[in-house]
View 1 (cartoon, helix red, strand yellow):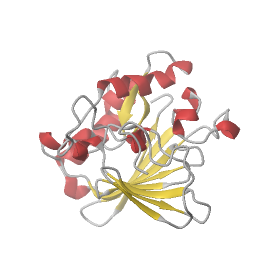
View 2 (cartoon, one colour; view 1 turned 90 degrees about the vertical axis):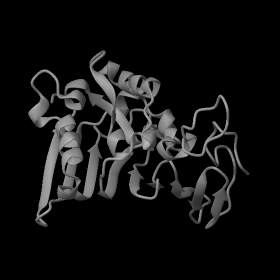
View 3 (tube, rainbow, N blue to C red; view 1 turned 135 degrees about the horizontal axis):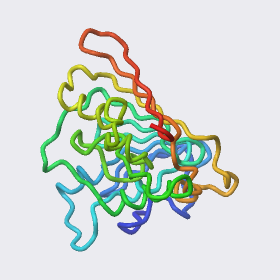
Length: 235
């Protein structure tokens, strides 16, 4: 049942209920009592690039480029993602974010541009494809880990650095031990306008993929719970 290298597993296929599918070069896919995939354990391009040997084909993981609704994903053995009923990422959990070697980083400018343009319906050329887990921490380049993020929030430009997500990433990279049990919540402005016709993330209207707010909770090196909010509409 292994799909083509560019096609998500299970797409257009009836799966058995309460089953774990171990798919070569993809990972493990777990179904519920209805045969729906509800949990995936897989690798992002950041890890796949270390063993990928398909000439001319990107190591980008198609299962992470087009996530399923109401599912959890364990990626690269440490990042835990949760999607909403329309495949949008609403939560990311990780024990800590250590800076990884350059060989374990993978960025895709084309993906970032594509995801950034999803915000054009709100304000043209105002959004980037922003990593929720930064590439310096091993975050993958696929859609599961990227959202349309206001450029000032993502880059810390135009005087926005003190309240920016860029500053948060910089601080995590500078002192990973002060950022443990990280729990990032992502909020949207309600269901997609085309909610009834959505079967996975790629079906969602572009502007409905733009978060309104991100909230990052973590435990600091003194064991104190800390929280920070990031406004993604007018940072």
